Image (cartoon, rainbow, N blue to C red; front, side):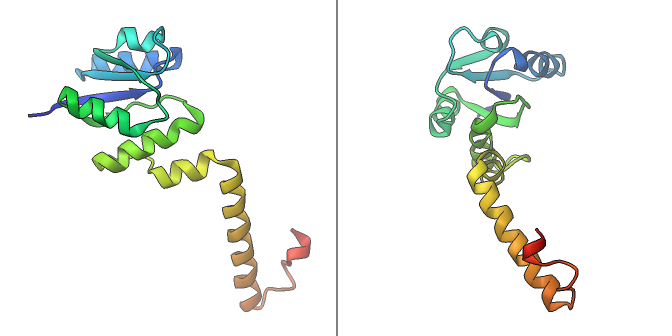
Length: 139
């Protein structure tokens, strides 16, 4: 039987508040960080020093330890938010998906998607007779 836990991906000083609050709420906290000296690793109930860019490795550690995440605690980890998305997808947790995290953290992908949406919006407006209100040249 798996033990239900809260995860921290990226256990820097920015994780301290979330870890403390989770523990106050009675949750067991499992933390992951690539820096063996990260303060959150010391505060968590269970800690792993791993590359947080590798969600497969994190999932293997969780399975091997008999842990089942019920939530991922919010910690600002920038581009590595895709790891949170991957783990949310794998365990079917509420929260950001890999696809959404990738879109939000990859500037090139974000701008390509935004451009596609803008082009689609312009086409829609033109077909609705609003071409004179908004044209591609005005954007």
